[in-house]
Every structure is written in C-alpha cells, then in structure tokens.
Length: 253
Image 1 (cartoon, rainbow, N blue to C red):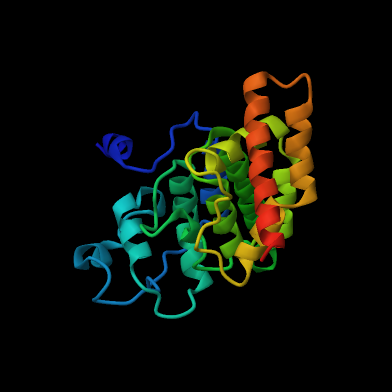
Image 2: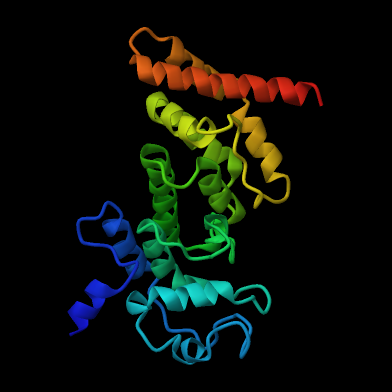
C-alpha cells in the first residue's frame, strides 16, 4: 500500500531521473530529527489539518500540498536552520521534478534561509547544495521551461553569489545559451526579461550581465560563425539585437 501511495504522490522522482542521485544524497546528508515547530504563523495561514499533521509523515513522504501550504504561510521571524535543514531534501526533490512550491513564483523557492551561503552548512551538505544548483541552472538553459532570469533570481535571493552564477552561464555551450535567450527574449515583443522579484540591486546586476561585452561576444560569435546552422544563427542574431537595443536604451537614460 505504501508503495502505491508513493507512486501517486506528487513531486517524487523516479529512480532514473537525472536528479535522483543528488536528491537521494540530500536525504542522506540532511537527515535530522523532526523539528517541533514549523517556523510559520500558527492557527492562521496554514490549513488546520495540515498544520496539525505537518510533522506526521517522514520527510521523504511529505505530501507536496503540505509543503505548498507551508510556503504559503508567513514566517514568524528568521527561520531556524533546523527547520530548513529538515525540509530541504523534499524542497530540492520537488524543484527537481519541476513542481511549483511558492504560488507567487519560482524565484522565492529557496530564500527562506540563506541556502546559498556555504559557511552555514557542513561540507557534505554544501556539496549537495552546490551540485544541485549547478545541475538546475544547466537544465534551465538546456531544456527551457522557467526563464533563465527566474532561475538566477531564485539562487541569487537564496544567497548564491551572483558573480558565480553569471560565470556559470558564460561557461555553458553558446548554442544552448543562444537558444535559451531567444526563447526568453525574442518570442513576442523582443526585450530582456528581468523578473520583479530581484532585491538589493540584483535586477541592475542582472541587466549588467545580460548586456555585458562577454555575453554579447559569445552570442554574436555564434551568429557569425559559418559553421552555425542557419536557424540557430538567426536566433543568435536576434538575441544579439536585443542586447544592442538594451545597451542603446541604457546609454540614453
């Protein structure tokens, strides 16, 4: 019966999923006692039945709608690391399965604790978080789905240094990057997409990266390379054009 329930549970990864190994490692290294407190407001934001049973299931069996209800609830104050450590494996698994956690947007999925601050985690824990971050960002560029800026914002709000995130993007294959930016920027009205969830000047940092000479050079080189397939070259040219327009607009303001 339990196996059938697990098969029906939302946000669980099959054994052959590309994130299965890192998620399994997350359950191992973040294993801890169940907290006694949810860290969110009591008797208000959460469904009463979910609030009463929140720590009933084992963390790997925590229903996705329980987790979503917890994300919906307001924090009482700074979240205790013990609560976030306990929830993280299930959070990472849901994100790996492309399941929405916070109804307001992907960007706030990891920001309830400084998840990206390596100094706050044991070495094995940080290795899991670092591996997950890189895999998730690579998949975002490779497969589409969420916009690149939304993903960068999610990790930026969670404390990952932006310069490291931007460097990872620049290291990705130019063909995948151009195709991704074309999907994000050039379908409909061409423009650089920057989410409204950035804070502390993150939106300015993101704009500076998207209009940087380094990114522009990678995209334009691809567009002008005679070995680039014509359809991809057209997309790269379109992306380069969006960058040029953004630079010109910024210079005029």
